[in-house]
Length: 416
Image (cartoon, rainbow, N blue to C red; front, side):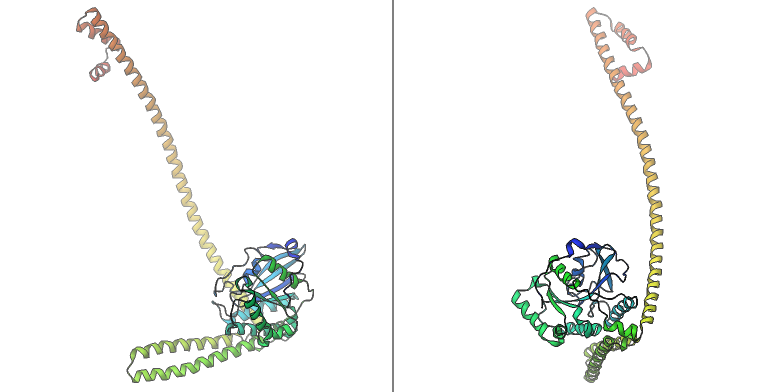
C-alpha cells in the first residue's frame, strides 16, 4: 500500500481538452473502472473539467464507454477512459461487457496498449455487497493475473469517513483474496482519494510513473485467439452469474406456482392475482436472462459490425432530427422577419403620428398666444371706451377694427 503523496507533475504539464481526440499509439491510455457511484466520472473531471458528468447516489451517469483527453506534452495526449459499472441502472451487464470488450479489442487491434487501470471503490460502504463483489470478479477476469501489477486500487470518499473506520475497511479489502487481496499479492498498488484535485493528481502521477504498458486477458482472447465473448474468461464469469440467477428465479417461480394453486383452492382471488402478476414478471426476467446469454455468443468482428450498424442508425436519427430542427428554425426565422417588418411599419407610422402631433401642438400654442393677445387688445379697447365715454356701438366698431371684422372673429367674440 502506498498512501504517501509524491511530487506532482500534473498541474504544470496537463492541459484539459473537452473534446476527445483520436487515440494514437504514442498516447497514454488509462481505463477507469468501478461500481456505479464510486466516483469514476468525478475523478476524470478533476483533469478534464466539464467532460464527465458526476452521478449522485446509486444512479449511473455513465452509460457507455467514453474517453476524455488531456495533453501531457506537445505531440502526446493522455486519454482517461470512463466506463459504466456492471451494476448500471439503465443497461444490462451483457451490454456493458460488450461495450467494454469492444473498446479494449478495437484499441488493441490498432496496437494501442493501456498504460494502466484505476479501479475505484467507495470506502464509505460498510461492507462488500453482492454487486460490488460481482463487479470485482468481472474486473479481474477482464484483466487477467498478468495485468494486476498495472492496476491502481483506489478507495474514494475518504473525506466522508473517519480515519479509523476507513483504515479498518481498507484492511479488510486488502487482506481478503476474493476482494483486493489476490491483486495486491500480484503487484496492484493501493491508494486513498479524498476527492481533492491534489489527491487525484498524486494518484495519476504515480500511475503514469511506470513506463510499462499492458495487454489485458480479454484483449488477447478476443483478438489474438478470436474467441467469442461468451468464451472469454469475463464472458464465462458473466454467463455463470446469469445461470445462477436464472436457476434462483426458476426455483422461486416453482414455489410461486404452488402458492398460486393453493390460493385458488382457498378461493383467495386477490392473492392468486398478485401471484400471477409476480409470475409473469419472473418469466419475463428469465427470458431476458436467456437473451443476455445469447447476446454474448458474438466475436470481435460481429460486435464491431453491430456497433457500426447502431451508429448508422444513430446518425440517421440525428440527421432526421437536424432536418426537423432546421425546418423549425426556418419557420421561426420567417416569423421573426415578419414581426420585424410589422414593428418597422408601426415605428414608421408612429414617427409620422408623432410629427403630426408636434405640428398640432405648435399650432395650438400659436392659437393660444393669439387668443391671449386678442383678449389683451379687447381689454385695452374697452378701457379706452370707458375713459372717453364712447357708445357701445363705437366700442363694438372699434373691436371689429381690431380683430378684423371676420366671421371667425365674431365666433371668437361669442366664445369670450
